Image (tube, rainbow, N blue to C red; front, side, top):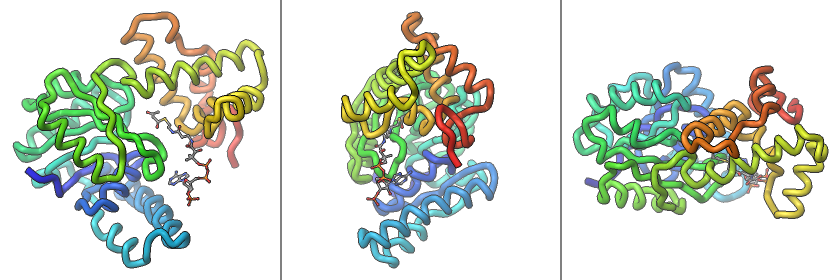
Length: 283
Ligand code: CAA
């Protein structure tokens, strides 16, 4: 089986980025969401990214049009009936993901791989609702998808070796670097990144330093491209909280306790860049 037809579920920040890199690599992409306006918003982001590439001389206008031409809108999961792989990037909610995977299992061809871009939910638990757990796998892209090189590839308990190989091969075609990881809470990326961000929030909460000072120390002292509080705003504070809760619950260690200040910000609706306010204010 050669992967050519791809369905991406969810046209948000991650889904539209995944659809863009798939189309850039020559795959035919159906970008699925529940409303046309969500698809159009995602298409707008992709068009803006590609126009920037044209302005910078990295792509021609023809290449941009060809890439966009490979992306079609889907508002119905039944469109998965002829795809080779589905990459799900819907909301981080186990019930919703399990419901999507159950439906996909009934619709997608027998050979199709069902991948999820979950940042921390267990792959094995998602796979368990399907009749093809050996064809379910995690493909965790990093934000912003068009820029970041890594794809963490997570094997569920039942994931078959040949499925892993296919996904690794596809990842290289996307011009990304695959890294193999097993199915534990937070995988590797968020097991390490989120406790660091949570600790930065504790440092702010306990008055160790101002938010700017905390970010400056990590940016200039550790050469991080963004300080941890800026990065938390960029990821979304609700997402940060949900990942910390998964680590706390899944690993059962108090060192993963979400900082009360993080909880407070999320309760206030201060979700970071996307809501206009998090640790910083965005115009
Ligand atoms: N989409 C597409 N391209 C983008 C982009 C976006 N959202 N944001 C930035 N870029 C591009 C810019 O267009 C620019 O490209 P060119 O100038 O070559 O055209 C390039 O990236 C650099 O951008 P900037 O000059 O504006 O700013 P920068 O040098 O600070 O880079 C950044 C921006 C790449 C986002 C950088 O700050 C960075 O690497 N930040 C950390 C990102 C990170 O840690 N991501 C992981 C988040 S965790 C995650 O994703 C996992 C999870 O499950 C939570």
